Length: 425
Ligand SMILES: *[C@@H]1O[C@H](CO)[C@@H](O)[C@H](O)[C@H]1NC(C)=O
Ligand SMILES: *[C@@H]1O[C@H](CO)[C@@H](O)[C@H](O)[C@H]1NC(C)=O
Ligand SMILES: *[C@@H]1O[C@H](CO)[C@@H](O)[C@H](O)[C@H]1NC(C)=O
Image (cartoon, rainbow, N blue to C red):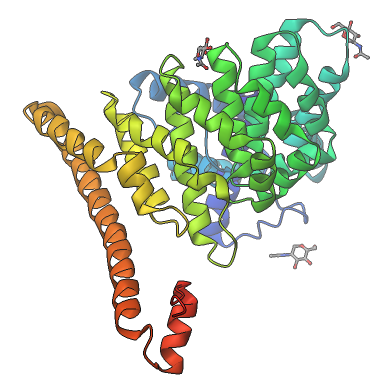
């Protein structure tokens, strides 16, 4: 019904605009120059609208697919689907209406507009939040209210309103609900609202949800663990405060536990390895800031490298991205990757695995992409290794040539920088 009313209104608007354009008539909404249709014509329009509606939806090709992205779009549609000649005739009819008739029509339209007025998103969020505050709400209604919030927090303005309306707190309380589905959707809402939104990120972190969500990542209910990790990732991505809190809550142990345990749901492990890649990337971008020690932890690095042995191509690819970003951190050591993680071996095995997969025509493009990434990682790794070799060669050279002989101030500085000391003789 709502849609029909809209269409009706749009036809009026179309009449106004078409006639205004055609005759240069003053189409001033406030001056009473708006043309109202008679009740009979309204009915006609309504039928027309419905017929149009039916034909376009059943044909399935319509630009009218049950929703318009904007009012402008609706208006364009209404004009496009109107007959300009008829519209003009009708507009001329309306001009013959007496002032009192016009007045009456205006009142009718006003009433209609009131009916059309749909509640704002903020009002809808308030309703859902008030429902959640009601402790005697049934589980189904609670879940429904959360589902509404999940859809509503998608636009950034709505997400920003959530805290003002008291929504963050009530959603956070649902993280402790005995029902796993309720906990899952609550985590999902927090993740969605803080995704790429520093304002909400900070609000949620301040309310202390991170620790709770990190506990939920350990849930044996896979969906809950996945949505909780989604929220954790959204909260700490590009947030220095979030990342510090994460490491303080032994986040790196959590990451390791998941990466090392092959019996954990693959979707969760995939997200964890992506998160490691993101964390490494955000650290290598923050050049001024100190790198977190957790990301050079050799067990964590080995867990990521070991994932390249997976037969899941998607997981392999995500592991490669993470390794690439980890290699680019200044504080990770090439020799740890070489000796402790056996990265050379892992990359070699992967090359053979991918080579075999290329026989399969249908997946060749994807396999090629992964192979390109693999060789890029290999290149970065060897570059990093060479730096070590050149570095140590240089130290040796300096030591051999300059220790015991008088050398320049510059050499002293270099020695000091390299932390080389000549044995006093
Ligand atoms: C619309 O009406 C108002 C008030 O009568 C008037 O000030 C304004 O100039 C009019 N606008 C047009 C476009 O005619
Ligand atoms: C709380 O929910 C119950 C059950 O749906 C309902 O009967 C009651 O009116 C609600 N209370 C408030 C204050 O909305
Ligand atoms: C690995 O994960 C499974 C399933 O979540 C769990 O039961 C098991 O205790 C974990 N193993 C280790 C060594 O943490």
